[in-house]
Image 1 (tube, rainbow over the protein chains, first blue to last red):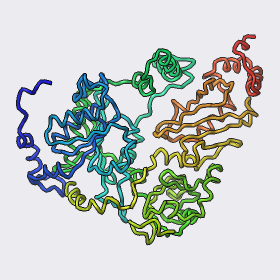
Image 2 (cartoon, chains in turn yellow, blue):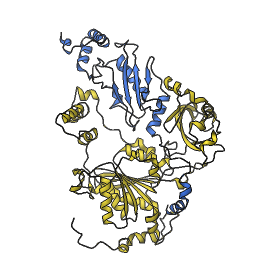
Image 3 (tube, rainbow over the protein chains, first blue to last red):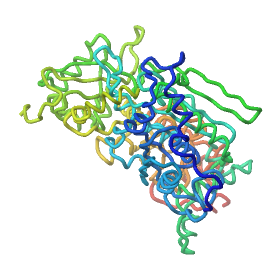
Image 4 (tube, one colour):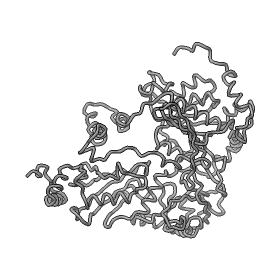
Length: 430
Length: 181
């Protein structure tokens, strides 16, 4: 790369505008905003940002965040660089093709913005321990799937704890800023778990994917799309065999998806606009220097330019971000006593409850095969079944009362144990 | 939030280990919804359900249907249901692992049932799928075939279709060309 024509701005010069923003009072600032010239240093020293995705949005986000005063940034992406990325993922060059997006992006931004430290993670988001995510002050998402958003959302909301009045405890808060683009359209939303709706609260807003009946594809195709989808879905194994026959590697399902799926052209400007909005929201959220979007910004550049902010509402009983019902047990309370308690609990009135905890199905009312397998648990104390945790989350399903009618319900419970200290040792119970 | 991080930084040591153990993996909303679906299952008579990976993996389900009326009485048909993490936004992937002579199921086990693809809605559940599959055996549908030959026989000669089903269920081979004979 040739060196830039002009010298890069000297350090204080580069941050002049940001410093003005952070050192002046205003009427639209957050209640705990303390304008001071030292605020930028705090931003750099106290705050760790995680950027999820180092693609079209991720490249922009890393650059924007680094130039907004954030100094400790991590970026996670499982992808490698493809030639087709180069038109918009501006941190990458032809010679980077095949390398990790996260690693190259981190390196490029660190070369250009001095004092910034970006730690790349070349792996899947599910590969990281949950604890990894707890170190971050804020998580900024530049993703392209519902599944990945839903995963990060449940991790971030999982850190949230509520006090006994069902108020979110600020220290446990892990805010997110989620960006997304598709062609000329995009969105930026601010998710403050426990305050604004989480991703799961509004997931039903996503339109269903267009799918064709299998029989139409196989026997009575009528459109070009039917023919392509047929090859993709039904004859895919033949592509595999063909690749094997000619010794070609790389025919994976995800690659096939990439070739076949409805690819909407990615537009660099849309990514830039949405990322800028996300980085700005992150800066405002963390520093308090101005009010954040409340809470869902949509951008449409297709027909003129249209930007709108909608205030989405929380789902009161959201299983992911809601407080759930607080319930206190004795250390000797058995599972069957617990199920009985749910029937009488004024906020639940739940009969025939099935109980699950962090992937362990403790008791299932049906089907018979599962009822039999879980029946021995009924006589076991909950404290033991929940592995000696002082407090934890349990989910129950059963028939619960809603407006005077018994309806099938799925509820989140916050279970605590009487007389058990937070840091109690497990061997006390034996 | 910066003030918060200042406080948090001071408290870091004590806050690091509140529960004395690493934070646990949370159940995904899809898994929880599935837990509810399974706990509320109300299967047709003589339907059997198993979980090949044990009681804590509900995402992989095996269902054996034994139709009690129609052409397929006396048969047992095994289906695997693979529930995706995005459930119920996306439907489970259903395959028939029993080779079956059926207009709406092909020989690779692909099943043509509207609620498994184009008509899937998040309000549907595992129970509706099981009833949908059951219906396929009570009322095989010749209008939307996946196995064209079987559909043609069903449409043109129901008696022959009945015989072919019996032959196939008893392990016999139903010749494609036999429909012309």
